[in-house]
Length: 187
Ligand code: 5GP
Image (cartoon, rainbow, N blue to C red; front, side, top):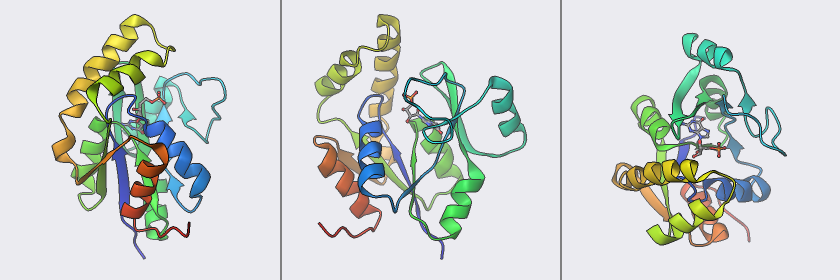
């Protein structure tokens, strides 16, 4: 059985990571693609679970061997990409699969797998997004401005997606996504 891939994308700091954490915790039947990235590991992150943390040379190798479904430089800094083989094998095995990636990556997946379901995660309002971007407090002012610039462009991309989910509550947005993936929930 071949299952439909779901791609979740949206502006920076819209809360994709929080939605993903909720789904990981409450819906273990869904497989999350583990991206490769050249960004340094943050405290608490586990190699092979949250990301495959690789060097620039290793990332170059993945591209050269055509092993990436998509890849992009995110926030003008580090590279992130989706290894293709694990995604294809999960889909062939009928496992509901989710990619949580940036907009540039989503566009590349659309070119290669147009039958996937493309879900745009939107903030309740632009002001809310700015709050989330600046309130995280882990990035410098320069980094925050870079992220705002990216977010503005990303918000304009909503029309390229099959469906929009507004992230005004993590649980509601996550369960909406689960329903879109065709997974029935008991509670
Ligand atoms: P972070 O560094 O905070 O973990 O992630 C930064 C951004 O990279 C997020 O917007 C996330 O969606 C995006 N990202 C994570 N993995 C991938 C990937 O495999 N491909 C692409 N294109 N973007 C990714």
